Length: 398
Image (tube, rainbow, N blue to C red; front, side, top):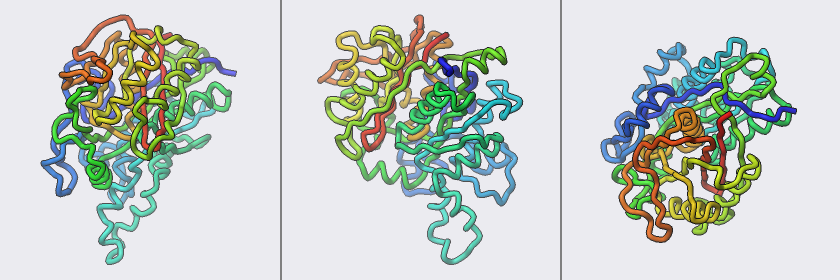
């Protein structure tokens, strides 16, 4: 049975960069990717602020070499873009040389295309091809096929913790000896449905979001995709692979409090962090940096702040939320933040919490607001979803 879960490749596309290096440069140069909606035909265009990726759908079609009559959603295209970078980064030439799986997370799925043609479906059949790409599993199937993976393919959709659970499942399958290699992550594009939905919940900020600030007013939505290649120690040893970091801890818990809100005391988040530390055989004091969920909503940041104090007491490690850079990318959030966690480990660098000014009065926690260099061995990353689904991952150096 495999004892370690190595990360050997990463790929990402977000509003702050089209690959891993571009994302890293934006993080250390405090270059955020938040702007008013430009690419979606909505009444909120030029009003609501989001994290949009620069590529148009047409540009993605050309970049990926797809046929003009394809039925790819934007979610599938972004996912394929990032997954291919991860495979290349891991220097994999034969994807099926070992038992390989693919686990992808999404919440938007293909609704960006089906909502576009919803009112015309009954009058003409030109765009009926997008109906079958609506479901969440379609983007997973398309990405897996483009990579040549068919041993094990599945989709996870647990709201904003989705790709954390994809990473966790991949790690567990490798540890159990079921698979030798798993490509894990998530992809979500922006859509009118999600923009309108979050606006209805009254948790969208009219300005750039301010995670963990007393005067925070809500989140900025974003779109992104990120994937990591996980491999067993046996494959790493046999192929003499370069290891970027290890998935050392993981856990999932549930707040069981409310459909869309977290409990005030952060019970689910507390359990997830405690269980992840136990899985990694680490003490709270071993954590050097926390990439917080930090959505900048009044409820989430208060709940997570209490959970951090529950777990770490008076000695909460250096922490920050990177969502002020990218926006909240829903099911892709944990995957892009996993990439950021590995970059933090590789570069011994903490990325700043942008736009912060005043600590939350109840908890008085202050995130890191400047790029900070320090020795980092273990990074804890939180992701909490609707339905109380709370997940924590821990990434470690060799």
